[in-house]
Amino acid sequence: MSPRIGRRRFLAATAGTAIGAVVAAAAGVETGVLPGRARIHAKLGLTGEDGVVPDVAAGQAVAGTFKSAARRTTVGWTALYPQGQRLDARLPVVLMLHGRGGDHTSAVNDLGADRYLTQVVQSGTAPFALVAVDGGQDSYWHQRTTGDDPQRMLTAELLPLLAERGLRTDRYGVLGWSMGGYGALLLAADAGDRVVAAGAMSPALWHEYADVAPGAYDGPDDFARHQVFGRAELKDVALRIDCGRDDPFAGAVRDLREQVHAAGGIEAGAHTAGYWRRMLPDHLRFLGGEIAS
Image 1 (cartoon, rainbow, N blue to C red):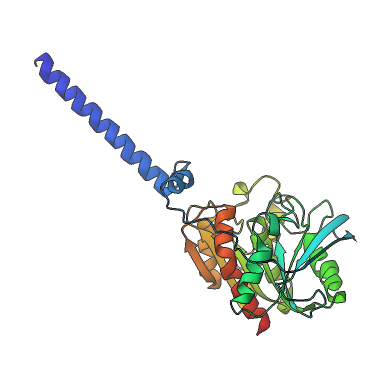
Image 2: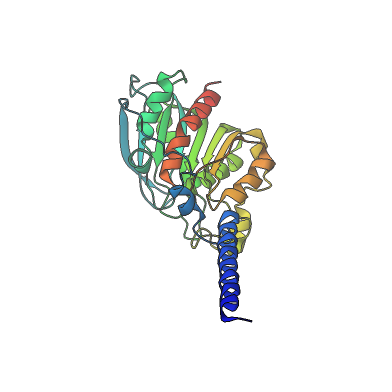
């Protein structure tokens, strides 16, 4: 073999190996085997547009705190009203549950929920109040071994407080994102027929305890006790569940959607505030229509 022919063969083999590696890497990213799919798709514009907070006037808001026996701490809350509604208006309620690391201010500061609420009401949805509350940085909205019980705080403390203010709480909706999306589904399954509708954006769902985020549950028994998969009660609640295709929870969300036949879908998007802002108007219209009927 001449040196020239040998070199050509070497270069051809090297090029083939490199191309194969690129193709394999791309396939790995697309199937989720390799990390970075969401980042690559975002750069390519494949995760969809970020939602833009509408340029409308926010309605009135009232905020406060109360000492929660259920959570063993002082809890902050904010009630948001559509533009043009008085603070003593007898409106139905949608509870809004924040994601991990958030608090009752996240609905406005991160998602602009006050202005989205005005926008959907101005476009024809019956008026309702959005109420956000502190559920704990990483409580995952269920009772913990520490005694912290954010779900009981919602039903036994927050709702009576809102009723005293004149809001209608006999039947209500619940909406959450990420950790709060899971919390919304769990509350819908646990709270009986008072929850008539629930919306979940990118709910934090896992099939196996070995896969859960650190601190999300107190152990395998806690994980099993607070599952939303296989909960027949969810079939009696009007549900909308959305998740981005590039979200790490997309697979589990797709499985739950098939179980409960929820509205919504798996769309272009990732686990980001931009995606939740994009989906928020549809969820508010869905919930507003359900609690008004």
